[in-house]
Image (cartoon, rainbow, N blue to C red; front, side):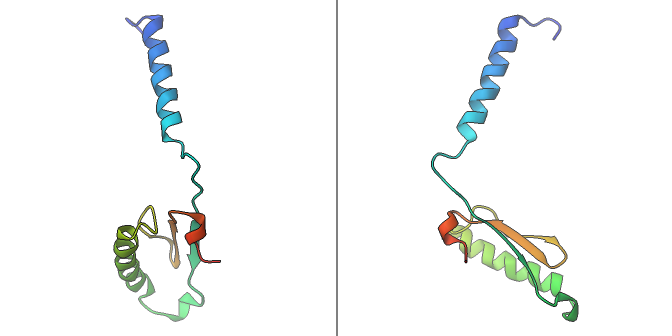
Length: 91
């Protein structure tokens, strides 16, 4: 760190730690939903159909604050999201 003082390095460290602490959830537990389509190989064009249906579901469920992030297709026929509360995740 050329041209900076010890105080600058301390402030950077302090600000980084403060940001980390402020980003931690306060008394919140979130549920992660990971799903896989059963027998997906027998359905042609599944991925495009799945993307469209999950896009529509994401809009509605984000508006209702049921999920924190839109659904994402992650591995062919697998998709996932983060529920706003673990109690909202299906059992």
